[in-house]
View 1 (cartoon, rainbow, N blue to C red):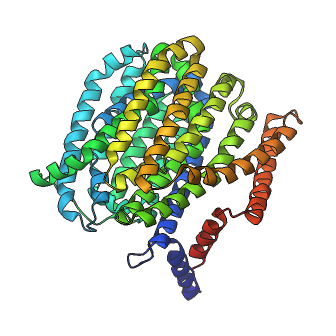
View 2: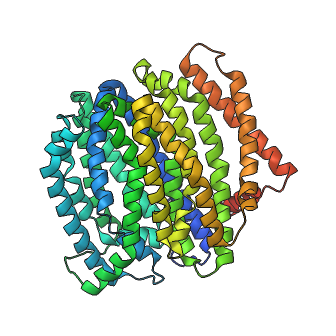
View 3: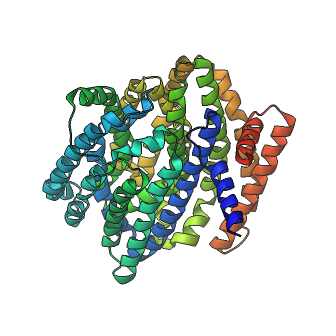
Amino acid sequence: MRDRIRSVVRTIRRRFVPGDDDGDLAERTVKSGMWVSAMNVLDRVLKVVMFIVLARLLGPEAIGLMGIALLTISALLSLTNLGIDAALIQRVDDDVDDYLNTTFTLELLRGLLMSSVLYLAAPSLASLFGEPAARDLIRAIALVPIFLALRNPAMVYFKKDLAFHKEFAYRVSGTTAYVVVALGYAAVSPTVWALVFGYLADAGVRSVATYFLHPYRPRPALNRAYAAELIGYGKWVTGSSIVEFLYGQGDDAVVGWLLTATSLGYYQLAYRISNAPATEIAVVVSSVMFSTYSKLQEDQRALREAFFSTFRLTAFVALPMSVGIYLVAPAFVGAFLGADWLPMVLAMQILVAYGLFRTLFATFNPVWRAVGRPDVQTKLGFLRVVLLAVAIVPATSAYGIEGTALAVTGILAFPMVPLYAREMKRTLGTTYRRFLRELSYPVAASGAMALAVLAAQNRVGSPLVEFALLVSIGVVAYVVSAASLMTLFDWRVKQNLRELVSVMSK
């Protein structure tokens, strides 16, 4: 019996854990992608369940207050992001141990500075949003940068070596702590502090977990040459991080500033749900493919084919999920969140398109970083921020959170989609026709799915039953239509799926 159990464990490890001696980069990438996917699905499911429960217990205003606190820490994290991890992953050398103590020291200095600034600026930040109650929340989460700084810097190997089974343990340990602490506290005292203590537990547990997952033990030491080298590459990542915050969370800041904490609660939950596929797929792609593309950076043809395989699979998954969320949004909100949250439905549906574009663009940015051109992402992001700054305030003032959603989505659709495509065309030496061809098949399959779901809408009175019915019909319709297209045409996603199955069966 013991030998059988060991045999099963060895089989599972061989099939799912990418080994150090695994010479097939494609196989290691697929296995790593599976771990990241599993990690993000589990992470998302746990947090969605938690937020559904807490949304009913706490209401939109409490969610909005926590949103203000998180905005402040996100802004500071973005402004001070040194880009060190990206610099270490991009290096061709497999061994970066010599850089780790310098990394640890730089991050520790950054964390102490951030925590001090957050604590001292909390009253002013709360006043800026017109929500004095946010002051103590901001001061409490000021501990988080210190927790982040104390993490083992050797965790960079989780991504550099495609060892995402360790990244899975790291992420899930924190999320589990977040959910358990938040729900446990809310059961005793249903206030916004349930979210605060859950957030602190998440950061603390993750920091401790890194020392169980890697044997390296850092110590404070600063090598100026190494620091200059890392920051030299990371400056563009820093710039990219800042513009990503501005166009990724600048809309939250405008809603919180112009409207109310309740409106921010509606907008943030609408964004969280509508962009769930984008968030999860983007994390998988950016985490796994950056490492893979970095190993292919000197072979443009191999890089191009790896990119289009990723783009094809991303579109295959993201398009039907986005269309499905748009169609079932009213039933979902009515069934799981209740009538208090219905005002967010229209904004949620608008943001679905934003999420779809985000998902597709997630395949672009790792390529630019891998070939040593992180400036492309930063420059395009800066243009997007400028355009958003012009449009978002009047749109929000005139139409509320729906206007905010229209502004961020419209600017991403045009002019950013054509500009992103043009730059990637130049980077990979490809054509616009190839992009359109890869998108045409999932668009057709998703269209057939949409027709089937629309035909079944409003057939039952219960939102929960309608939600279950629409999801079931959508899944069946997409599978049937996609399988038909694979049979009738040369949709290469069929080959990609076979490769995934082949890797899994080894």
